[in-house]
Image 1 (cartoon, rainbow, N blue to C red):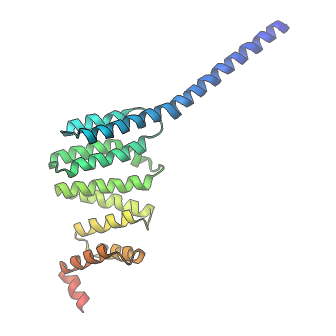
Image 2 (image 1 turned 45 degrees about the horizontal axis):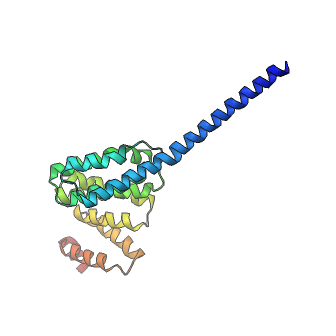
Image 3 (image 1 turned 135 degrees about the horizontal axis):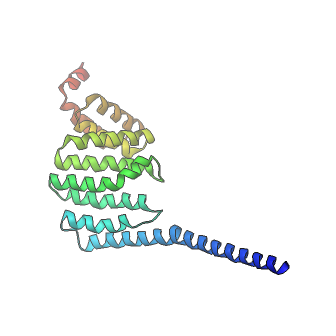
Length: 221
């Protein structure tokens, strides 16, 4: 009887030890190794783009997809955010409207799950960056769809952080681009209330008001 009990206890302890070891291995794999490997691949990709810049849209996509698609429970948000800067740099090099649309679609394929989740360590920064992506796309293509998207994401970023300068300056730019006088004036007042010494916004507002006869007339009265 005792022999049987001892064997059962031993079997239980061995099984428990195996489970514990498996859990530790799993935590090490998913919590340490995979994120580290993903980060290493990301750094290698960035270094590769610096030494050998992408020659085409397909070349850029194939290279940045390697770390983006590498499975890891941690790090995807940070990788996507940083990769966005590389994609934006490619857009600003003067890509044609078709290429720009493809690049934005490619990037948003990775950004959409992050934005749809509504959370993250730097979710406000993610929302702002999506606005910046679309603002740059509008500047490169003139497509008003991008301007509307930039306004949407900047507005959400502003709601998440009403006094964060990035969202405020982003809205200032898109309101002027959309020729939205009332919102341009309102956001400029908010910026100057926070940073009264901002000469750039002061000068931009003077120039903007000179292009708006109705505002100039009412101001003169």
